[in-house]
Length: 155
Image (cartoon, rainbow, N blue to C red; front, side):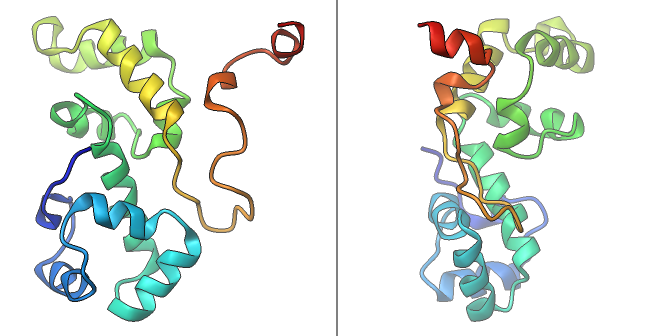
């Protein structure tokens, strides 16, 4: 569990940090739990004056910090368009690894098994409830993601 100070988040202002701390949120893990559900973001927004969209973005960043070993590669992964667990868990490990190697070179890249591990962690974590989804954050068993429907019923 990654517990970073709020200032660690990309795009957060000193005023945002002050407002969140006034509500008892002192680190990224607490902010993650306070922003996972849309209703919680709505309430926190009303109490802090921070928009729901900003809180959602901060929550996504906090969720990515929960993936063990991903932190040093977060800027690279973000540039690839993976800004939340939803995109990470749907990533193809071989393709993601190839793109990271291409971006940083073989010597600076994580191993293929590390990238597989990141994706498996993302598949077992609850996902942020996105605005307007109207359904639970996680509908399927993480173990079934990417498994053909026929294979689920024959096992």
